[in-house]
Image (tube, rainbow, N blue to C red; front, side):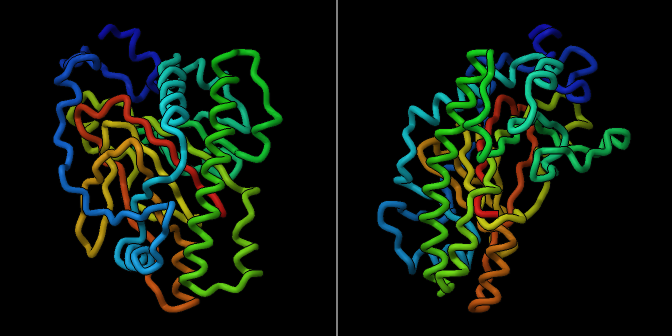
Length: 297
């Protein structure tokens, strides 16, 4: 790879010397250990089993959602467009995107409008990621002159509609388990604050960079997070003080219950809900994409 191929990386992510890594197009590049066994409980969106859902929320605070109804063609197009946009020069990404689609790097900590609220680059204390923060409500009012950007916007808008449908279905099932009253449920079903995140975790090249985290250990502050990963993997989850690698499955989603749902569970029935997860960086982690939907905040 030539030095110009790192122009898409934020400057602090670029190698200071020529790295000795296999080509991203080679088979060895993705030859990483991927777990064969995935312990995350599975919930079928077409026929939600309330007992299994309750157990998954109590023991894990998250679950894998299958038969979610989002077309794989939409997911493939969204990932393909995201890869193309992330491959643009860093300066171009900074200049091309303004709210409701914002470009960020180095931290997952953003305000609801997409403004970075914490990043100490002087202390090299930042997360090894970059991404797009997308506000769903005003997205339909935006139009780009660039066809690729506008196509990306259209895909995000459709994906947002699909995720809103799923988030509503999941939350209604959770509300039934928690026996929330209808007025309280309607208050949480507002999608006005819904947003999407599209993450890329660039490759680490040097030994000191391997101590970095894509996203450090955390819980989500929202009610629900719905994640979709590419084939590279890297997501880790914690259950009963033990960490597990999540097997990447392109045709399924990972649903995580956030702090607000944890509070509702404790208040309603003393249930312990909410998942803990992270995205550690590994040496050959590259071109990893994660599409995250945070709804019902």
